[in-house]
Image (cartoon, rainbow, N blue to C red):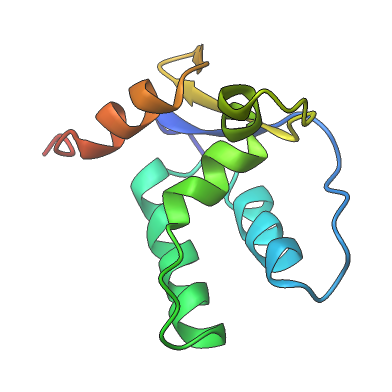
Length: 107
């Protein structure tokens, strides 16, 4: 399978407690490595609506959290288990990630 231009790359094993919502989200992201980012976000939204009705979770935030971008912004040092990749380049800023996510998909 050809990797998408805007996707995730797993860089280390996930280390979350099995059965938790965090573990489920991480597992979806890991399984969808190389898939288009918008498909990954859709899968996370589906998981969230299925497993926690009424939740106001922000699926793209799972991705930036697991990539270490949320902890970087807060000053905490979480070691990322994924990288966000756009056209072969690692995205290192959550604002840039949100901009890329907001751009329309090519036909």
